[in-house]
Image 1 (cartoon, rainbow, N blue to C red):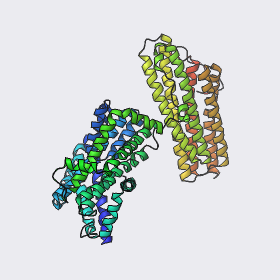
Image 2 (cartoon, rainbow, N blue to C red):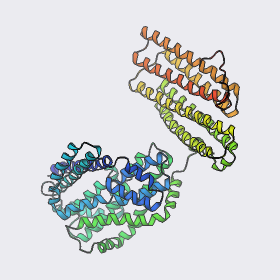
Image 3 (cartoon, rainbow, N blue to C red):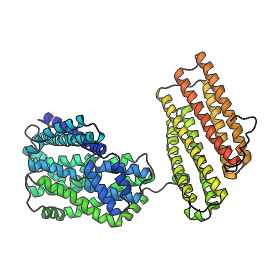
Image 4 (cartoon, helix red, strand yellow):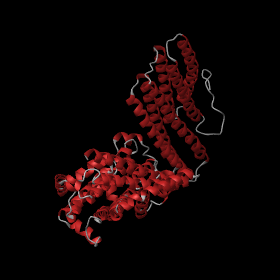
Length: 573
């Protein structure tokens, strides 16, 4: 019996998750980019944001999936923190749709589950015959819905005669009731289990089925009372998915995930006293006046789930700026982030374009410093096999992208003002400089990728290759220093020195290739390690090309017009 129960639970949960995933993916296939466009365009008003969050989550049946999507939009700079929090709040209402679907199992009994088989067949045929992405998506929605109900049927069987008939085990009933009668422990249990399986929908479905099967006894007033804390805890536990998704994202994305957690945690805290004194139970039963019974207990639980999220939304919606302030307090910008983000681009200086350009140049200098650090970290990580250095390079590349977005947006805004001819000519040159620095960041990523390949395949560099790689790094760093000085101080001599180094890098590229062939011929290094070394050399040469573009722009006075800047005779283009 115990073995059958575990098998039925495992299979039922697998089908439940698989069905939910198919429905979610099917909707994305059917709707295409419309979901993201909906989120981007309809979230400027906080009420509309809540409605959109609820609607999208109803469709894809996962508040975690909606929140992860929102985190991506925040990370891309398409949504502000306040807009994102509105959608996240709405997603909590939308996710209750699954509990209502599960309730059909109690209302319709086994007939609902039996209907899942023809739905699966129809969904499969539609998906198979569909010639367009949209039709295949519709097929996946039907297929997923059928599998979801089939999974619920297996879960139901797990606690019936075919598995472990939980209604006949007084010891299990007493344990569950005692746990539920201590709301704090029940909330923690709901949090823990939901965090492990990463789905509040699945956990609440299991609790609903357990209640339906008599796991909490047959005193239905008591059953409702002891199951509600599990539902409240599940609302907190489900936020772990968003927290994990936000680990490698921007600060505001992390705050969005934290807002999801804080919203549910605070709601649970002020709902617990209402639960202790029995007020919450009475409100649920007032909304559902047809009385508690085995056939309606799952509906009452669905009502409790929806009621919690609707009331919590009504409470937080007018004070969403307080929620924003709380998460900012929990996750403030660190000193390191403050130092590396473009924070001095003041729009009120648009009316004095010369000062606005000076600000921009300072930010481009800081961007160049971050680009230098990314390249240093990437090459160091490759040479010594230091994965922490590689991670720092990747994180710094994200910062470089932030600089590009901030500076480019600022210059585009400045271009709409009345500008002198000199300022108008400088704008596109500065934009090109920013793009060159962003491309350097991409080369840092290239070096990280080949370094990871070197580490994974345990490919050592020969002593000759290590010496040449170290020399390349020194030259690139020196060229960065010259360009940064030239940018910061408008120093033509430093810019010309950078061009000399670029010529050195070009010659080093040819010399390194010859040395590589000699080492290969002498059996000093392997072909695989040699390919990685050549990739490093080529990336270093291309970095030099981008720095050369900036140096030439400085020599040309940041103007397109005029004579092409002269390159010193001992360097090559």
